[in-house]
Every structure is written in C-alpha cells, then in structure tokens.
View (tube, rainbow, N blue to C red):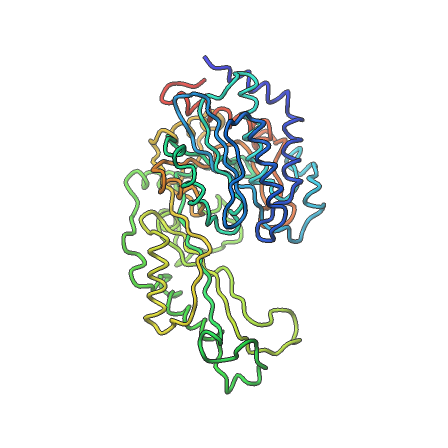
Length: 476
C-alpha cells in the first residue's frame, strides 16, 4: 500500500517552497545559442540532484556545453531513464517584464501564471524534482530507480546526447523504459497523448563564391556587377529547386522515401478516433492555417501529418536583409537551413548521405552541408507498459484524452530508444504553458478548473511514478 494521497497532500502544503525553487532555476539564464549562463545553470541543476539524494551526480563535460548526470538508486524493481534539458531559447523581444525577474501574475482565464524564459522546460523539470522530493519526504524513497541525463544543448541540436548516453551506458543499459517529463494539456484543458515522435535531420547548406570558384570572393560585390559576375544566391536557390517539387508536394532527393512505413491497423484506429473528434494538427482550431496542402482533410490529413516526412526550409540568409535600400550588394555567401521530420525507418545519417549524393549528382558539389541536428524517431505502442502506465494516469485525471499515433515534432528521446533499446514516454503532466519561441513565456501555476496548476502538475507526475512501478497492477 502506497502513501500516494499523502504525497499529494505534501505537495499542497509545500506549494510555496516548490514554486520558489522553480523561480530560482528560471532566474538563472541558460541560453545555449548565446552561450549565456550555461555552466552556472548546470551547477544549479547538479545541486538539485544532490539535494534529491542521488548518490551519483556530476557535471558531464562535452565538446559543447556541459550536461548533468545523476542516479537515484532506490533499490526498486524497475528503472527509468529520465531525459531533461536546461537550455532555453534566446530572450528576444515582446516581454512585459524582464524574463529573469520570473514574475507571477494573473492571465485570464488562469488565476496565476509564472512568466520567464524557460517556463516550459525548466519549470516542468523542477516541478518533477519537486514531486520526487515529496515522495521521498513521505515514503523515505522512490518507487522506481531513476537515471537522469540532462543536457544543455537542446536548442542547438543535442549533438552530444549520444556521447552522454555512451558514457553512462553501464548504468543506462539497465533501464526498463524512459520518460521525458512534460505537460500534456492545451489552453482549454484538452489532453493530448503522443505515442512517440518523428526524428529530425537539421542541416545548413552554404554556397559561396570562394567555394564555387565563381562570383565574389572574400566578400560582397556591388549589385551593379550582377550582369557580369556569377551569383551564389541564385545558385543556392537553383540547387534547392532540384530537391523539392512544390506542385506535387514531394521530395525529389533520390531514395528519400525508401523504407518509409505506412500506418498499422492500430494506428488507423487511433486516426479514425481523432477524425471523429474533429482534431487536426495543432489542435481543433489550428489557428492561422486556413487550408492544408492539396486541400486534404480528415483521415488523409492526419495520416499525412503522422506518417510522411518533411523537407522544410526554415531559414534563408544572404546579403542585406534590412529595410530600405541602404546597401546594394551581390552577396558572397548564401545559407539555408532545412529541417526534415522523419518517421521511423528513415534514419537521419542515411538521409543526409542521400542529400549529399543528390547535390553532387546535380552539379552542386561546391555547396557545403553541415549537420545541425541528428535525432532518430521514437515509437511507442499503445500497449507498451510505459505507455499504459502513463495513459491510465491521464485517464484518472481527465476524460477521453486524444491519443495520437505520433507527434510531428522531434526531440532526442529517439536517441535513447536507438542506443538503449527502450521505449520513451513524453509529457503526461496536468498543466499548460506557452511562448518558448517568443516573449512572455509562461507556465500556469494556478489553473481555472480545467487546466492544472503547479499542484496538479506535480501530483500527476507523482502518479506516473507509482503507476509505472505497479504496472500491470493497480497503483491507487
């Protein structure tokens, strides 16, 4: 018999202390794209693991930013690998308050939210540690063993996650499953449960006069020379045009689709349930998307979203891009970043090789390609133990969660699956937050009766620990 409800009560009684800890962590900058506060934040993360009672806890040096490893050995029958990250997006504009003042305020319809950079990932990861601390305070230990792999490079590609996993493989090979603690509610309280996610190959292509042997060398030329000087930007645009057909909405790289798997009967049953509920990618409303590719809808739309790869240009940079006509340039260099969301069986290294071969074959061997991110897909079956343990917790908190066969987005959880052979569960926490790519990022700390606040978030994360430890037996 567990003391789960006593742990819930402990969380209620220690809400202020738990909130203060989250605010402390968020007040410490950790912007990986700007190399801002990364080591200081890693040291603070290490302190939290030590305070939890992890007998092993240390900073992990990588070729990039430091990560943190920790191991809580409860002597339990089951072990979970836990993936989190502490870096955040750049601050940017659009903030009502300083993003590191970590301000509490009302935000209708929510009674209270916490504003600050990192409210999403840093807020949730500390809420998880708060939940674990409450279990230990009441029970004396945890119901499962936990191995924490925490990186500081999620926003810059997670390139050193494989190195971190390999370093602690002697422990991690004993993990039965993995989790990436997160929230699963929308702003209106709806709950989404994803059975894994796509992989991601993120690349940067660069064409320069220096590498091409034509066009300006060493810097831009005046635009008046465009009638007599070769143009690196047009060359890059022409190379891109060989890779994708916007009329057919199909990737043209030879062999790109080889090995692509379609949906299973189990997947189609889930798709049909989503269609019946009128759900579409991005939520039931999908604001800002008046029409989907080829006018598709319903079942065809969801199958395409969940099971087709993408080739998305997310940035083009060349020459002067400011307002007006201050500069007239024929640029020396053009760059393009492209992310590819890849379903299982499409492996990022193989896709990168096919893109390189395609460019060379079409006469663009001078265009360089840099890999910015390389993570494989993570696939869960709805009947996997960790999926069932998470799903029954969600169903105990809300009615009728939407179960998606796959999330279109990506993350490093697939690296754990590939290297350790384990299934990794994503967000199951009752709560909501938004804004990690812009200003006024926030997490809900006191909800509206539909969306959970901090207490509900931590209590639902507690339930996940008890549920997985007991599965297939009852946990309540």
